[in-house]
Image (cartoon, rainbow, N blue to C red):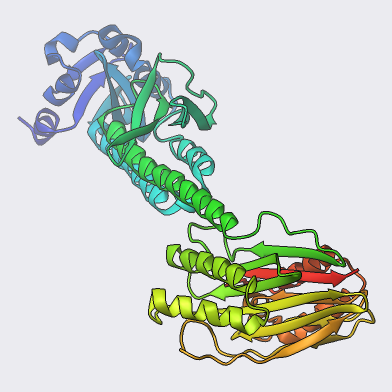
Length: 474
């Protein structure tokens, strides 16, 4: 046997010679194995006579070569052997009046490459889910993002539904041209968190494309989604509870006071699950009116408890103690008894005595920024000195200060979150606040406080809660 014959017979590549009519004249074992038959059963027959239209691309290519169209080198073609779709590398060139055909099977290589591409897409999907499914976005936005992430590697259409408090599934997110709507052809994955079903993810994809790997990826995506959505729902409930608790620590409405027009504002540094420590109050006491503003150190339940203690103690004490300092002493004693000096707060208390010739404001500050007096002519002056914070010393010092407010004058009380906003060169500061207040001369209290809040927001970062209380003499 010649070297050429040995190469033909023993080559791992499928080889054949076709005559001018494209019939097999000679076939090696490798090609017969690719086509799942014996060499002798292929002789005298064309490729299409053996395999039908599944090898039409190969037969057309060979016909082109036999017809003088030039040699083909390394062209990838698709063939179907039985029910199996195969990928071949075809080399074909003319020999005498026929053609030589060489086929290399790359089906498994292409399947592996395709799997790797799909696996990379699935890994990228899960990495994106881990990175982007931030519970701070809120449940609706998260549900929509989960549905979008499922496309196109897992589904042609996706939907995310969550159980509401009414026990009914509510669709919060959907994506794709074929959004799942019904049971046929739909893959359902339950969303579970903390041992409970909180919803489901629906995927619509052709069964042929949704294999074991896709199922594993979909399950992992559902696990990521369930944890993020459960966290978002929990955060929303905690935020709602914190908001309701915060509202309970502040007056629901300000009282109607003869000779005075009141306004107040409160804004948390950020929407979240912790209750802030800033508070304000306004109430009648033994024929006078008392204004209070304060700032408890810290946030959360402990700060909320001290805020409640401060408001109720000052209300009770101010009804029996005419000197504002005595009310502050009462709160200081209560804090030391209950907290043992572990927590503190600042406060400013103003007792307003209404009269025919104006309003006398007696001011006592416990480590708190002094209130500002905005005169009708636009001038601004502080009234009061800080003194000691509450809850630290057995006998703190509070300074006696007062001012007489006439018609058109406004008293502004605030917490340090206002002046601390945007600390640094761009911060508001005490001078900046005084400038904003001066610019608001003639404004009603609600508008003046609105202008202050705008000025605070314009400074960018607000790291602390802010509380504002203003009283204008009519």
